[in-house]
Length: 374
Image (cartoon, rainbow, N blue to C red; front, side):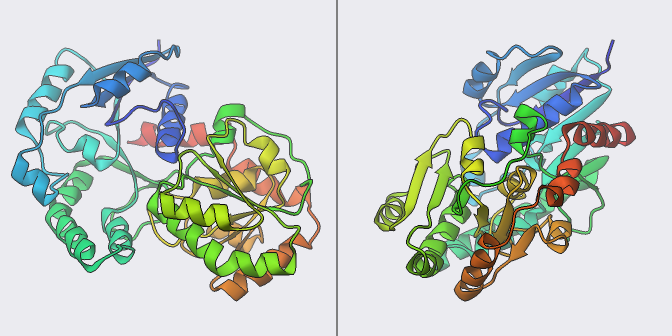
């Protein structure tokens, strides 16, 4: 009989239509190779009902209500402030149960854990780095002030959670001064399908895959459509750009997309493989945000080179050196780099190292190794 692991999160891994849920699902499936898993959802009964429809051997879902935030705390944005009532609820849930390991998804899921409980924390981003990026990209001075206030009030509580964890898991190198284990995001196509045969692109077109209701993605695509795409299209009116999103973009961006010649928007595509096969190059014009760009990893695993901003390629530095990712700064650089790659031959062998790196078996083994050592 496998030992038991408790996975604590504020949301469900289902449906896995965005990077946050896809990573949760990857962590669960990886943990199930060595553990039975109890998945505890905090404070969201709708997410619990959705999860409970799933029938996965070794996996059980539980739900724990959360006390509402005190109005003044909510107004101040104190998301990491501990709650005595929620801690008592967790103590009640844990009473009589025995877990070999506890894994929390994000620091907020660990803020009310009882003292003395050992846990591993899948943290994604350092809070300081994420908030600095959020502040820098804020649309107004008032928003910048508001985000700074939230950051300054939360950071002590946030770092307290990190110090309590027995092991931290990051998706990319951090500057927070805390040691941890790197476990990059796993491309969902690998999680879903396993190893996928590569094929050369059938057309010299560009592809972007990312949720366009997410601010950093929307801002990046707006910049690309305004500054780069007109230059590309004026040189080659036969070129096409396909934007794939799991959610509709805002009205302004939707209008810009609709008015841009040669650009197609697809929402809620279930099977991305035909799209990757029909496009020669993927773009990641992202200047801010959190996590790591899973769309970049997915493109490489499926045999497509990537042109990205330096921010968008963080966590993938080794693949920049290999020539699979090329960085572009300004609009002229993007234009030059894209045409250079569209004119170069496609070579399957170039992608073998990255495909081995992101193999499902190796990723699962890495996760279990981290859990065993924590």
